[in-house]
Length: 120
Image 1: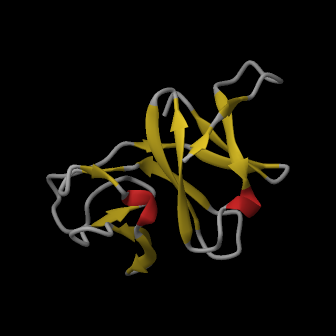
Image 2: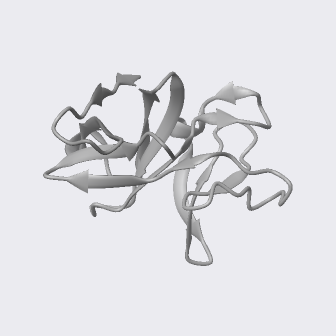
Image 3: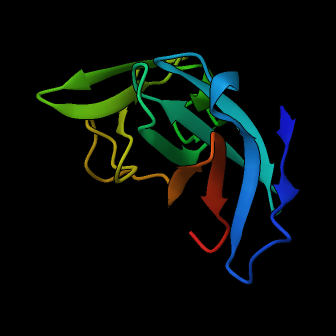
């Protein structure tokens, strides 16, 4: 798991968690952000980045960063590696059970560094 370093250059609540090159295309990594495990996903070879909770509410384990990245009807999603429930990477909504949703964070890439808005 990556330990995130605070961005001291601005007064915003962005935290640099890793470099973009540390996230292989169509995979995820986990970072500790203000004590919470955040799963960060890179879509293809692009700078398209998503951040959701690493906690899988179905298996009750922190594993979503190890899930399978793909899309369902044009929606970027990750399938949990345990029971295979799919989560919308933009909204955190479970695509297989509308009653379940995981928290999301705003993510961006600045000068090759992946940053997470710590205020969600």
